[in-house]
Amino acid sequence: MKQYDVIIVGGGAAGFFAAINIAEQNPELKVTILEKAKEGLQKVKISGGGRCNVTHAEFIPQELIKNYPRGEKELLGPFHQFMTGDTIEWFEKRGVPLKIEDDGRMFPESNTSQTIIDCFLSEAKKYQVEVLYSQNVLDIQPTDEGFEVKTKEESYSCKKLLLATGSSVKFWKLLENLGHTISQPVPSLFTFNINDKRIKDIPGVVASHVEVTVLGTNLYSEGPLLITHWGMSAPSILKLSAFGAVELAKLDYKFQIEINFIRLSFEDCLDELKVLKQDLAKKTVFKSTQFDLPKRLWHQMVLASNMGEQTRWADLNKQQLEVLAGQLTKGVFNVDGKSTFKDEFVTAGGVDLKEINFKTFESRIHKNLFFAGEVLNIDAVTGGFNFQNAWTGAYIASKAIAK
Image 1: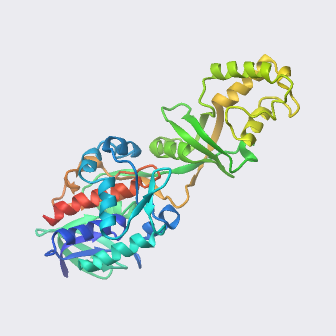
Image 2: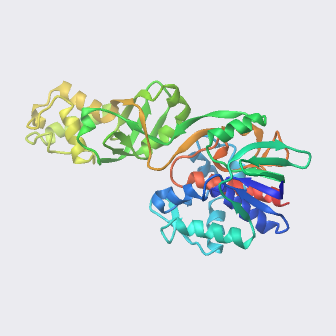
Image 3: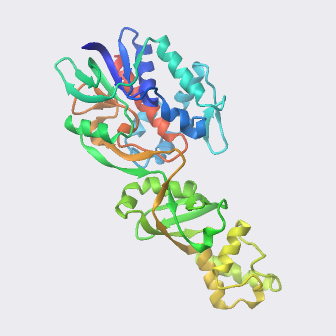
């Protein structure tokens, strides 16, 4: 049986970050990573369209936690220990400067995730972290000295064990055998499938700021909305899918949303339309786009309000004005299913947060067992926040382990 001081299961972002920080803080320790695939850091490679969205330019812990549907209150303390500024400094010290994009997402200046991968591999080598690939962990047993970890090929023993296995249902089963509670996994960060003639012919149209409510629930979000070939996407939808992950799964992804495209009340919109009826009397409604809406979206709203392309403002009756105001401020759309958002396979679910000590990321059930990343029931909206959770948890766990 091979013996180590520290074994890390999972050669992804959190696993490598923890291993490097442990070995750097305490070079005496013999540290190894067990990764089930033929190579590690796969998610890092494809994240952010192959550019790796390392973190997000949010520097206030109280604001940063608002991006975590699960883990919000638990992460407040950890973010005071290690957050965005520390991440930026960590990478810069190792020759990987980051840049901030207009939407706050942060990427390596090189614009390629390979820079992050190369940094991790060279740091692991520098601090003599052993990385063993094709090691699929089948069993973990606590021992008097620590833990025994069995893979198909080999048995390993260690004093301290860190699990950074991501959203792996198979691995969660293993953790249940160890006495941990698992919050059942459901998808998070997905787009909505909507078959509706108002949006059927206008894929690619973006409404820059809308308000979306899931009818019959308390779920609400606002932000940009993108109309796609299969329905709707962009931050307003993705935020709903993340914060409503558990609730929307219970509805089997069949529900109704109400959209306010112009962020005015129905009454205020109606008042403005009445003024336009006077001011633009001779013009056609179809051709006079209002409220800063994209032209193609305005056209669809007009046609859905019982008007033709030649209808003039002067000809509108009370009912048509009301229908148009309704379409603009409380348009109802039927959602029927979901689609994965890009390569973001984010899952809500994982080790119950009550069973973790967030000062150290150690298990409250087994001494010397630590966790980092998405193996815990923590997930975030898109924009670099899931990685920031991985860096924070891995760093804090590494400090506790290196002691």
